[in-house]
Figure 1 (spheres, rainbow, N blue to C red):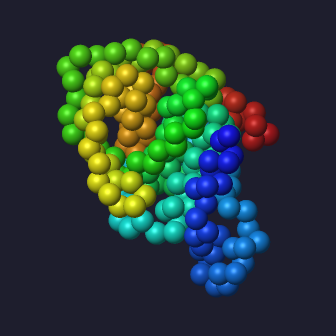
Figure 2: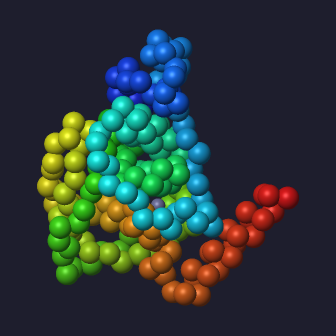
Figure 3: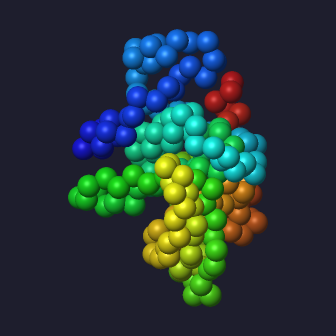
Length: 203
Ligand SMILES: [Zn+2]
C-alpha cells in the first residue's frame, strides 16, 4: 500500500543527475526513489540550523520523495531533512494509523505562528536517537504556516499528535532535539550512551 502510493509520487523528475553532466535519459535507468541514511546522535550535523528552501527544484522534490521513503522504511511518522544530512527546512510526515490509508505530507519552510498555553505530554522518540523514548511536554495546539511542493502556502491549526510532531520536526530544523527538554542528567546519559555506541561501531 505504501509502495503503491509512493510510486504514484514519482513524477519522473530528474533526480540523480545533480553532477550536471548526466544525460536526462539516464534517469530512465535509475530507481525513482532511494532510501537515504539517517544520521544519529552524536552526529554534530543534528545541531545545525537548516536553511530555508528558496526554490522548489527537482532536487528538492527528489529529497522530499526520498525522505518519505526513508521515513516509511525506518519506520517513523516524521522526518526532517537534516536527519538525512540535508540542512534544508523540509519535513515529511505521515500520521495515518496502521489501518488507515497512508497520508504522506511535505512541509517546506514550516513555522509556528502561535502556540497555546495549554500543554500536552507525549512519549517521543526520534529516528536519530533510536530506541529511546521519553515523555515531553509541549504546547497542545499550534498554528503552523508552511509551503507545499507546489509552492502553495498553507496555514493550519495542529493539535494532538500533529501538534507534537510538527514541533518536534521544526525543532530539528533549528538544531534542537527532544532530549533537550529532558533533565540535564537524563540528556547526558543518553548522549554518553550514543557516543559509546558510535565509538564501538567505529572500531
Ligand atoms: Zn526527531
